[in-house]
Image (cartoon, rainbow, N blue to C red; front, top):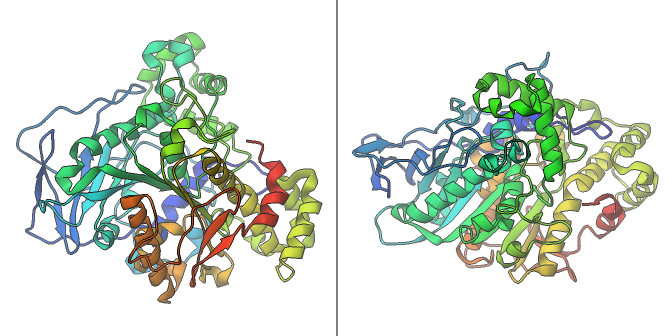
Length: 553
């Protein structure tokens, strides 16, 4: 299970568990429906009945595609009458049928006290029939075309669900249309069979990404019926959602379907090579007692058995670093992904898409729920752990951190250096490569707001930007505390993201932020988002230069 403890291997499964467990207090809010108000929208396939809320309308569990296992998605058949779109649709299968004894710990989020307002609703069922999306809009049939914000959930490429967000507050505050998406995951979405079964399965290793592209095609064809502008679509996500956004920016199949992008704490520099993905498929076959000549039998393996085999293989192939994708992830494909998005440079298609990107100050505390010792290190413990992620250069790099942070405890030095190495370094590399080769602007941020949870030990953890962007701080009080400062920051951030969705520039009336300059490789100006937001020039110069030799992607 994933702990992201340096020197140990990194399993994606626990990170996803952490996201799910912490979701109620880091992200999800529940908008109350108004009884008796049933808005109906006619899409190109048929009529949908949604719910009216105090701040607008929601349409949940909207089918955007159908698909056979490992096959590309197809458009659904039209229907007559009115279909209900009142509840979230099924999520992709991801639960381990054979969980390890003890379950394992995962994120810092599970240690937070849970507020009653943050209690999660019932989880949607899991099913291979999972091609559903959700829409929130502030108005219908008023003749306006609002910018569209398509949220891609985190959970790397293993788990998660579009049901993890409530877009009602963002839609109301920004007068935008918000969409969240379910899609195939893990072995169902990313088993590369092209080298085993030929052209019929040419894109099975990217089936999950083809689902997202199908959802974006649905947005293009239907979102005007919900008050949205199909020519102003922003795709954004945190963690795995950012990695998926990176893929789409570089994919010829997605060209024209997204017009702005947001990559938040999820720098997707590079995906899987075909030979590596084929080797993972061989491991999956072996787990199911199938030889290479029987790869076609994977189509008929029961869902539970395929899930169990997936979990076993992924446990054998843990990630060494946050950005590594050793198994069941998107793969290079001549039609869908001919070039890694940002390795060794920005792919051609990424260069014309405006981008907002960044990271949080202390990313890795999110993954320390099963690592209480990490918050109480002495110097010897710091040195031992640092060798796991800094290698032979650990002493020299730690000396620079000690000089820059003379009052920091060994645990804080560990948290900061590990977070910088894991997420900041590739996030800055992505911004550099995009800015160096692109015509469209890049805007960079770092979220520095310090959570009071756990006596302030967790700082600004991974995923913290989500309730700020979605303006759901009130549902995340265990993370933010009772202060009004995060409410103001949420207003500033959500307004800036909406402005960016509308224009490709986060500056504008109502954002209440300092002027946010474009990021360039000469100045590296970054918006520091805190109680008093400010712009800083190359704020991580020491860290960036000290850690640069470790990136190698």
